[in-house]
Length: 153
Image 1 (cartoon, rainbow, N blue to C red):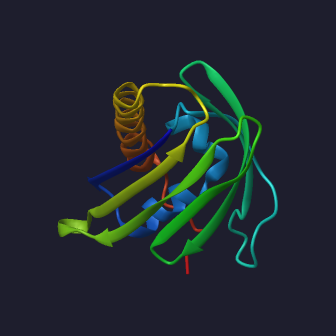
Image 2 (cartoon, rainbow, N blue to C red):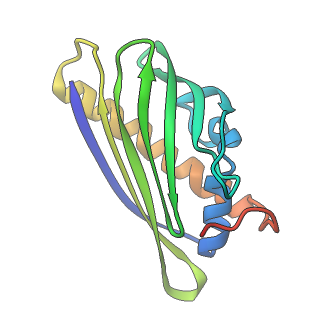
């Protein structure tokens, strides 16, 4: 079953701080309860995570996944390139300057699960999960220390 989620929200932090938080992929499980055992593999020439190994959790099922990331100055995209359960999909986060030093975030996820779940139940479950992800991400970013390490671009 295939499903899409699009959420737009604002973060009380600048774009650099939000991007630094996104670049801390090792901390993904801290704000996304969908993931555990997150390990970063190869990095790109700017030392940004390119390939990530993680265990995804949804509706009581665990799925060992390999995610491939692509970074832009104000955006990140990822896609599932391998899955122990046959899941597919990916997503993106695009950032834009908001008013008074805030950052506007466009969060998009497409997911295809090989689970026999009625469409309405899947969409409701995914929406709840991703609403929780957004709330946790807001807390994570706002507490994330501005770093002098990674700078996207």
